[in-house]
Length: 193
Image (cartoon, rainbow, N blue to C red; front, side, top):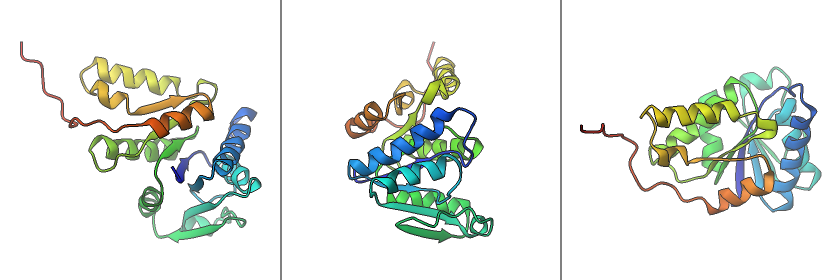
C-alpha cells in the first residue's frame, strides 16, 4: 500500500493516548513510505496524525471543504491541500486517492465516513481494507454491536470479518496488507425451515 486515508476526530479527546497514537500512526505511515490522505485540519486527532507524518518527512494530502477553511482550521504545513465543495465530495476524493482506510477514534463524522467506506466494500464497489485502530478499547462497543448484527441475521459473518481491528499500528497495517475482499454478495437469504 502506498496511500492510506485516515478518518479521525477533529477534537483531541480527554485521553492523552489518543493524540499520542494519532501522531505515532502518522510517523509510522511516513516511515513505511505510505502517503497520508486525511481531512486537512490542524486540530484534534486530525492535526496530530498529519503532524506525525510530516515530522517523518511524509507526504500528507488534506481534503477540506471550503466552508471549513473559513473557520481557520486548515493545516498550513501539508504537502498538498485540496479544497472541495462538500463533505460528500471530500469523502469521495479521499476514497479515490487511497488504497486503504484507517479509522482512529472520533465522533459522528468519523463513524459516518468509516461506515460508508465499509458499506461500499460490502457492496463490491471497492476491494480496499477498511480498519479500526482500537485505542484503549474505544471501539469495543461497536464490535459488540456488529456481533449482535450477525447473531440477529442482519449481517453476514463474512461481512463482519471485513472489519479489520487491532490495538496496535503494526498489527493493523499487517492485516491491511493481507486483506482479501469477500467474494460473496451482500444480500442475506432467509433460512428455510
